[in-house]
Image 1 (cartoon, rainbow, N blue to C red):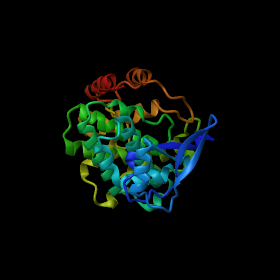
Image 2 (image 1 turned 180 degrees about the vertical axis):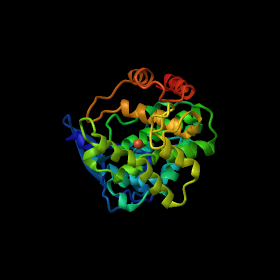
Image 3 (image 1 turned 45 degrees about the vertical axis):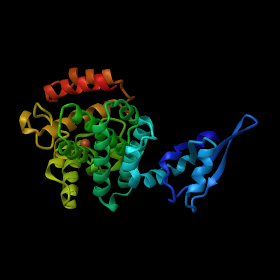
Image 4 (image 1 turned 180 degrees about the horizontal axis):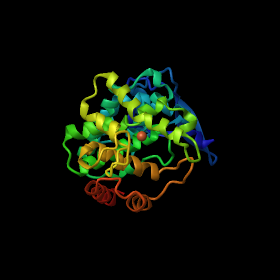
Length: 317
Ligand SMILES: [Fe+2]
């Protein structure tokens, strides 16, 4: 029973707000853990409720696992407050930042007709960049990345790794923001590709691969229709499958014809795909993934950036 509930930090709940899901207390009676309803979903979490918990030195409440989406949605507008709070540790902040992004992308990929959530994406990126710039350690965010591959978790993993890497190579704040937006949205075109092809276990036929390739241009089209995305953010979308040796797609660009943000996206896209569990392969360890990228994909990546990526992972993981 106990694994149906997950802890949420009391300090993430803002006084006089409605979280929107039931909040429980964990109590241990006769060696058995039970969860007792403390604040039901229709009620405002008022100061009395907070004071009662603080008085009893209770720092966590619990929610049902299936309510994580509701809780993540609740946290989204307070994300800045959460990452700037001195009462929340860096591992907890990383988890919240990850869950909020996952929720934004899951909403979009499960209902693409709702439109590309540009406002939500921009808010998340700027808040996360703010946190990253003030943090000396990358590891809490890296440790939270999902090992299970879904298009939405892959998008979040790629964005988080890309933001941290961009800071490591000295990009400016506005540049990190621009690259981050593009990375989070780099695969939005996959919403137009047949699910069975995307999740096929075996090798794709030539015809299927041609269809998959179209996600780049379809994604670009979707983002240009939004209108409020700056041009620099298009590069990770447009060029994440380009290869330094000209063997990538859609344009077969070479070397410096590929924008720096495209090169960053290409490295991280492959790295995350290799280090997460896929329908056709297990998750590789970072070292194994880097070795495959160096030995089996030679010429695909910008050499200098790839060396910097190895350096970055070395000190971050
Ligand atoms: Fe892609």
